[in-house]
Length: 294
View (cartoon, rainbow, N blue to C red):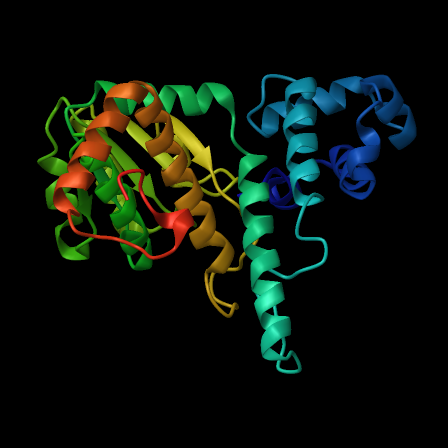
């Protein structure tokens, strides 16, 4: 759940609700306002702001304010000219659709990049580096998206097991080797079967990387590190999961690339040699595609 949504739904006193209504209305305008200035503007007191922060499970007002402003900044950036749920209409020509889908996917990647945090990415990469194998848990088409990640990782000798057979997910989680790590891929972060998977993983002390939305959810609360994805789509009312799929793919490609870079020269030499051996005889008549030996 987003901070904005929690502010709207949490139970507050009348004086607290006055402040909530004020910051929800003013949004980014509170950035340079002090506690005293907000209190004066709402005819309340600074202590009321502190009580709100504590009810929201933050240490203090400044922590809540910073998190709220980061969320608002994200929501007000990108996707200003296109709807992630309905990127085109029945009046669009096929070339207009082509342009809008391209714009949507570019926006999704830029949107996801804005959510990447150095320390979280570094922690996830180190978890993967130390793990003897990686288990990826996903349902529905998210399981298909992770296949390319597993394929790429296998080329640099990192074993990845995709667990997406829904009836076997918890069983697989229980049997994850103690030296491994797990990646949970979930847009909503509230899929019931994945909640059970997390319980099984935590019971055995397995480190968990979550790839999920920007809000607080069951998956993010229980993960050791969280990588956030583009969060613009509704659960059902949409043409397709265009932006979500691109965002998942980008994060998985990013993880692979960062792990690859840990031993760049060795991995590049290995991948090139193996590809040359496996794809011997493959050629192209287009110069830009030709390898040096041609």
